[in-house]
Length: 165
Image (cartoon, rainbow, N blue to C red; front, side, top):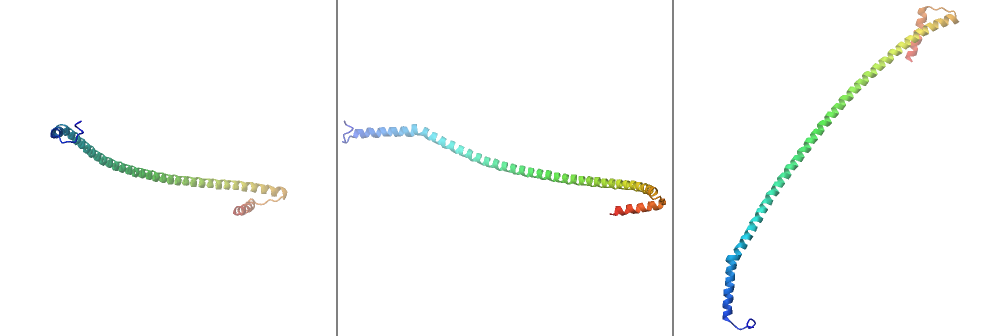
């Protein structure tokens, strides 16, 4: 086997150099340029994708800031609306309370006036009944006949004492 023989063969070296030279030239001019183009295209594609990713990241950040701004504005708007509604409800409540207190005060005053009027009417009726009762009582049991003026004054005096108490 001549391959395992370590003697020097110039023909083998010659053909080895020629084979490697042809292989080198074929690789350099025929196989490597398309591979280099593919690698270049991939690098360009990766760079393009990275640029797009950066743009999208910046766009996402801008959209995030806009979204946060909209959220903040919505919160401020809802706070203003709620505060306005609260103020309106509080004012309406105060007005209603004032109106109801006024109505209650008016109704209470009217009721007190009605009670006082009925009290006067009843006391006046009691005074008349008392006057007639005393007059009849004195006439029947004691055969006394007082003047109407004296009887009226005494009864009015007694009733006024009872009113003060």
